[in-house]
Amino acid sequence: MEPSLRIYNTMSRKKEVFEPLNPPLVGLYVCGPTVYGEPHLGHARSAITFDLLFRYLRHLGYKVRYVRNITDVGHLESDADEGDDKIGKKARLEQLEPMEVAQLYQNSYHFHMDALNVLRPSIEPKASGHIQEQIEKTQRILDKGYAYVSGGSVYFDVERYQQDHHYGKLSGRDIDELRSNTRQLDGQDLKRNSFDFALWKQAAPEHIMRWNSPWSQGFPGWHIECSAMSAKYLGERFDIHGGGLDLLFPHHECEIAQSVAANGQEAVRYWMHNNMITINGQKMGKSLGNFITLEQFATGEHPALAQAYDPMTIRFFMLQAHYRSTLDFSNEALQAAEKGLARLLAAAQTLRKLRPAERSSQDLQALRLACQQALDDDLNTPIAIANLFEISKFINSVHNGQATISAEDLAELAPWFDTLLFEVLGLRAENAADHKGKVLDGVLDLLLRLRLEAKQNRDFATSDRIRDALAALGVQVKDRKDGFEWELS
RNA sequence: GGCGUCAUGGCCGAGCGGUCAGGCAGAGGUCUGCAAAACCUCGUACAGCGGUUCGAUUCCGCUUGACGCCUCCA
Image (cartoon, rainbow, N blue to C red; front, side, top):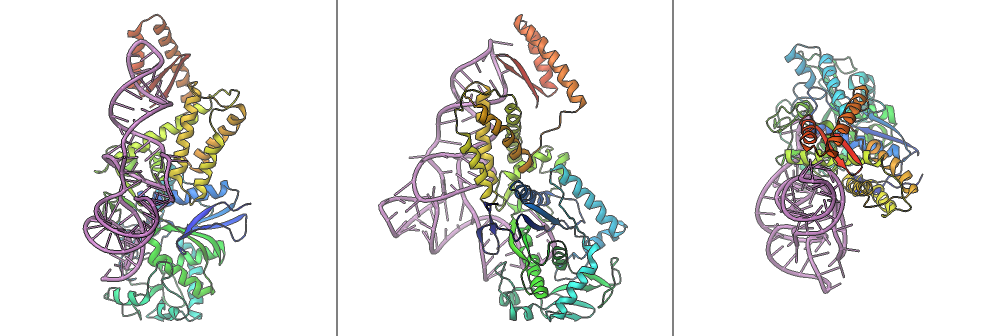
């Protein structure tokens, strides 16, 4: 298989030709959610970005093992490896088992990701199910001399690591600056340096989630889960690691340090990071309290939302921007996306009705190639979509008799257009093909035939009445020279 | 303070050293009994000031502004 895809590698800060370690196999690891709260727009962006990558890699013919974790333990509430575990805290507050909390939000995450047509990963490992692997990884780092035990906890020795390697190479951090810039906080006496991070934490008495380890009864640090689980399922070296840009530092930097410390080599060959969603120009953040959950999008119940939005509108909205750009949310932008998507989906329907002619009046190969090249160029979905709009325009023109398409072109275009729209971009039309849908088809056909007769008898009062009543019900009537069409608006 | 990113027409959002982004909104037209849809036409946008260049929205510098990471975050 010819490598055609180029992706932006955060490590080199350049676009690089993507060549997997063992083609056609591709190992892809993406940081998934910490399941202690309702999934929000930010989760959607990350999931959609890497869903697109997953879909496109498969489209190119790769066999992808896509691992996306669920963090259900070890992710601490506050600064500097101190404070509560997020899930443990929520469990205490709501008087639930921690695993109940994790399950609740994992279910919600799955529900909303399904609605966004985000494919489930190949493997979805949980941190709590891989305590042993994390303990082993921690032990290995200790054995190599890059960590130390302190008061029942194990910390990564960044300074020691820095002697042999470069801590900060991914994020462009400098250890001396970290030393002078990192805030000094209370309760850090267990760490030699403020920038050291926990591999294992001894559990405080009130801590619910705890496991036995060689060092103490406790729980693993947050960063170690990704190193342990990616190595388990993808090997000590694998192709792509993705995640939100906010995970760049410290999370991914720590992952690199852990892998290098444990295995002597970096695990990841291509680092990919999706950018943030902003609301009124500001990042959506838990601490800022300005995040909008996907549930709120579905219901429209949020002060910032003018209406409810279909999950496909959100997906399309995100695909209209490049994944490495910040994307600013606004109702106007969402509404524009809603209409644009409807146009594209309508064209996909119209495509099925086209009749071939002698020759094509437009070079379809060029447009299709442009789409392909856009996706090959670091997943440039905005350009790919722009070309799909061009093709839609052409489809509509053929339908109106203002352009022509050859039989060969039609035979190629029809499956290609569907594949790109539905399988690669992962867009989805409402499934109107069920039983009720068929009944509706028949009823509308009958009604519109009556209307046509009324029109032919110049009984416009009746024909308008039918059209207006249908419009009020959300059925849009479109007259044609040779009859009529309708669609649900 | 350190590191980094970005400033594009009413809105969203691509892109590039010199011929088109695209969507939404808006104007005019074709079609229609009237509409809607569709199609056609229409906006010298590229923060400011300098510099490099035959030529810069695109490269360099400065200024201004916005944002991100450095603390939990997708």
